Image 1 (spheres, one colour):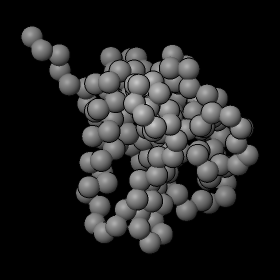
Image 2 (cartoon, helix red, strand yellow):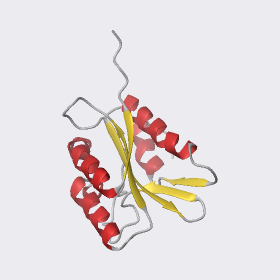
Image 3 (spheres, one colour):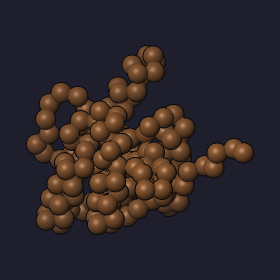
Length: 151
């Protein structure tokens, strides 16, 4: 029997996104994500945004894993409507950020989960009317060498 496709969920709002950030921390640790893409840092970013009454709205796109386990993939986003809708990775514009490698990550345990995550990220964008922008800086710089692609 073929494996059932994992559910892809979109979660909105600070409290719900914090729960998803914490649930995805084992995946982030397994992938060797930097501290700025881990639960403690992202929770602090969400707390800071709430305290400053930020214009961004936190969102998470999650590819579910096994029941009771971490998700197979997750993206933590900051949505902002100012002119065109802007979608950026949560925490990539927080200050201060440590130097070195890119600070934000899309977490995926394998290529199949990454494909589901990409589709899950596009579905909410495609449902919006008007202009929108998806900002994922440094993403190609991270994936190109790992996959043997030219930069």
